[in-house]
Length: 148
Image 1: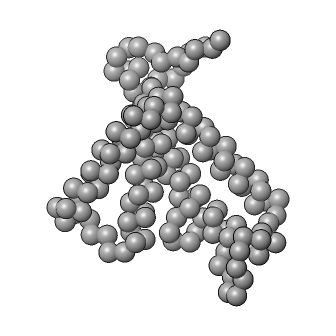
Image 2: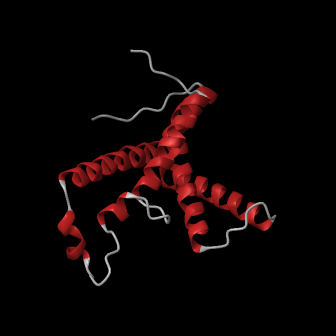
């Protein structure tokens, strides 16, 4: 069975899928699975008060998101590991810091900062999904998982 190698188009698709997963799960704009499950209800407090409207559609969407997170986190763990993930997160964090420092970005609110953090997380997951393919293309070596 022939395995597809790295392509920039495939990288962009994986990156966009990772960003979609992160922002569909939670975002500060209030349009996310989190906000769908826990809508702000005036006068009601506690988790139980929000779960009365839990439906099979919400359960299926939640399971789909969990499956997506498992796939992305497992691929990122296998390709980058914890140290590599922290390194990639640090690179994106420094990039964001530099853009703010040099005036290219001016996050004026906590929502803007949350969006930057969520974007960095999505970028780490996107790189993690593509890293093994990229290193295989650059080095000619293939990563494998031991089975046994």
